[in-house]
Amino acid sequence: RLQGWRLDLPGMRVVYLANAVALGSLGPGGAYEREKQLMPEMKIFWRVEGESLQLAIETTTTGWVGFGIAELGGMMGSDIVYVHEDGDEWKVVDSHAAAKSVPTTDTIQDWQLVSRSEADGKVTFELQRALEPCDPQDRPILDNGSPTRIVAAHGSSSKTVSYHQANRVAMNIDFFKDTPDPFPAIKSDAAIKTLELRARGQEESDPYPLSSAERTIYVEFCFPVDVTGQIVASDALINPDSAQYVHHLVLKGVKGTVGSDCRAVHPLQHHCDAGFEQRHAAAMAACPVANGFMAGCTDKACYDAIQALKGTDLYCYSFHTNRNAQELIDSFVEMLRGCDDANQPFAASDALSTPCTEPIDKFNTGFYLCIQEDCAEGCLAQVQGITADDVITCLADLYFQGSQYYAAQWLHTDMYAKCGGTETLAVTAAFPNDPSPQVDDLWAWAPGGGPLVLPSDVGIDIGGQGYTSIGVQMHYDNPSLTAGVTDNSGVTVYYTETPRAQSAGMLQLGDKNVQLDQTLVKPASVTTELVEHTITCPSEATEFMLGTSTITISTSLPHMHAAGFWMSTTVFNKTGGLKKEFLVEYYDGGYQRTLDANIEISPGDSFTTRLCSSRSKERCLGVGVMRRCAWIS
Image 1 (cartoon, rainbow, N blue to C red):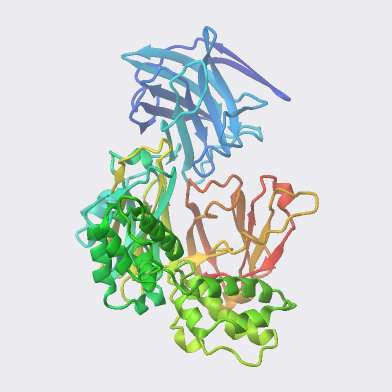
Image 2 (tube, one colour; image 1 turned 30 degrees about the vertical axis):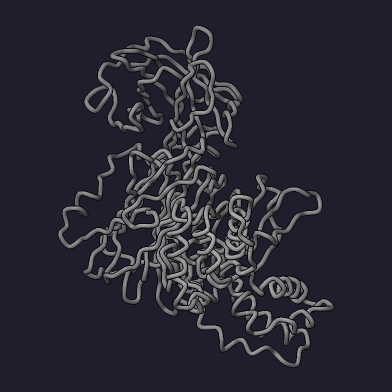
């Protein structure tokens, strides 16, 4: 065992190592109390000894290795130690990462390399560090009942610390006690059933084909719920053959009518005539198809099939392919032109043209004129020039989502009157109830992440008055733009048809739909960085929502899509006293992590959520304050 002494001075730590001897067997019963396989080629062993952590990293690689204490699970904000070869010696470097790059060396080196050994094709590094160093560049390892988020990686070179490629992992580890696996009890419970929700292609039995033209791919799949019960747990279902492309996934609860892609079933879809399916099928049969889409015009049969499509068919087609209707029209016109050459002398037609260009232009102009509080000159003229039919057939489908649909209605019913119009267009009756579904993020997973397991008396309602569909959003990363990659990863949902005592819901705070992204305030001294919004849900809101009841928040999931750098939510009691703060200093949209909360919310409590898109926290304080209330599902 290690013997020696340590001297701490301001800005300096001197460690004298004597008698650093081999510790023999590493695992439980040997030199270390606990162990964890991080990835096939990397394993750690550890024990807590007084106020220090004794750590052994065992790897089958010969290059550099790194281990870190993370905030969410990404590299940014991590406290990292890495070991590499420096000349004829192996060197341990205590560092931290504020960006996705080579970590910055800490001013004080708190990690010490105790030994390095090789045996049976494995290299073992034994390290030690104080659990809670007095160092602002280090993250503490706390015995507070919650696991510690760790990251690890390795590289091929022993001398140069370079990009680790896919050789990285993030997970939760409790360094102080053994954490039992909750799934054996769940899996052995006959009352708990499962749903396997996987990514899929055009046919349900096909895997999803990753594009070789895009590195980052987001795609959502929605699965109607045909049972009534409660979700009690979920776990990632990752295809090992394509695991390297799965960056993260998000499980969603959906209320409302949606398509297979979790988008709202747009009202305009109901205007598609009965012949669309036949015309669409004929064109698909006659023309080249790639990844389920028509992909060109090669002969007269294909040409005639496209010619038979009507302009409105393209809008209907967009619902089936999740592609913007106007882009489809442009694409199909190009297909026709492709057939109109010396070999295929077919006269290009305007059959695919639509009467929407002018109304869409007028809407865009009118919207931005009328949205100004002073009702800019020309607003009324623009609005008057749009007919109710324009709204239904054109504007509603600008982006085949409900937001533009309702923007059109709002423009005519609210802003027109506000700006002095004496007659409004009779469009309200043509709009059904809100087509936009309610979509809640329930759980997120990234490589190294753990499952969702709810307390034994809590479940998330599905079917009936609960979520009517379950969505799975997949985020793929294809850095080499590899062609031919398919994936059917997804989520296993565990549910029971026997109601539990408590129902879990989602309390969403802040800017759920990133509506503030285009309106962030820039301080005068900064012209390139956006700053903070402070969003409050006041005491009056919780008094109204809760009445005399209370709710318990079990976990918190900080999430800003890809729109920010740090965020916090602070909970105050009725008198303004601090109850809890959830803080993420280095947000990374690629790594989602639920934070333990276990806090009771009473009537009169309030929430303050701060969202910032500047890397400088000081620059973000006190700017752009607004009030917006939360909502509960």
